[in-house]
Length: 401
Image 1 (cartoon, rainbow, N blue to C red):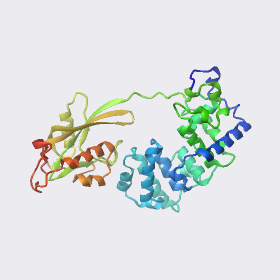
Image 2 (image 1 turned 180 degrees about the horizontal axis):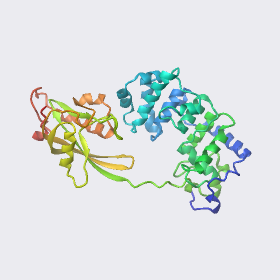
Image 3 (image 1 turned 120 degrees about the vertical axis):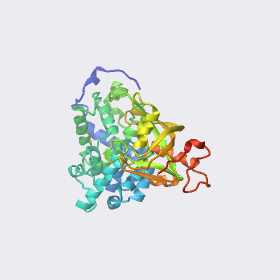
Image 4 (image 1 turned 90 degrees about the vertical axis):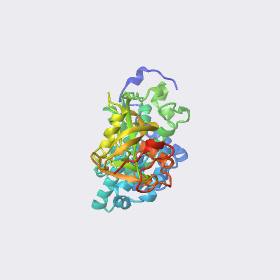
């Protein structure tokens, strides 16, 4: 796709032409025809159940469709409707969400379901304003539920839709900021305002996902290419202008493995934490500037009421959350003593490796847990003795408590 700035492409929100009445009608017709032939076959599109639409849209926030589908299918089997979700414990909801990240989304779903079960006949409202009063539902999600499930003539503008509409009009300014953001929603409203809002909104979503992609768009197969101003000007690759992203910050963390009588120590993160709130993790801490890994590990153990030392490194892994790229060292703890108590945690627990599967854990700590079965104590270890795994030798001494 040719790149380069064209003088006519500098307009931020000129909707006089080509977005006239005839243009809107042509684009609608092309989108509907294309969607009928090429729209994605997705599980939540088998019906227009408002609950299914709601769950799918929340899961798709920060998550790709191919990654999200298995989670959606398992979720619907476990929590098939609003009442089932409202009756579930937070632990079960978060455990079902594990792997999707951004766990506040799961908690918001449950909170909204509980409110619906109290205040409504366990059904999602049809009105956009009422939908937005529920936890975790913003303008886009409300528009998607109202239009797809209830056929309301309201727009639903996500990143894909915004990109398609900006290219159609050759708007180069940031579509997440005024005035361009308002113009995008206004244009989306004009497209759905003549009926068949569900199909129009979903066609725009799909077009942005599989044809009008951020990089390498397939303009030759685009159903609205003739009415795309950016294509005519040769500036599709420049729209929308990339947002300035903050540089990634690097973070160094350490996690400690403590075992007693064949069980591993895990702690539950406080519910008011910004990251991993309420999830179960192995004792861990960030290695601060001018601090050694051993000192950080002692802090992590102290938060669980124990003292101990840094032992051999079991594994090292990397993961990324928001703008942080983290290296996590995992060490076996040695010389541990004390009785485990939640000094700076919601709870502590000793669990066999197979029991950890029943706890909601962040992905990084789930990876650690997957390594533990091979380190479990030998069958000869008795309940009252401390023991060491053969693979780690004497460095794996268990905590006394």
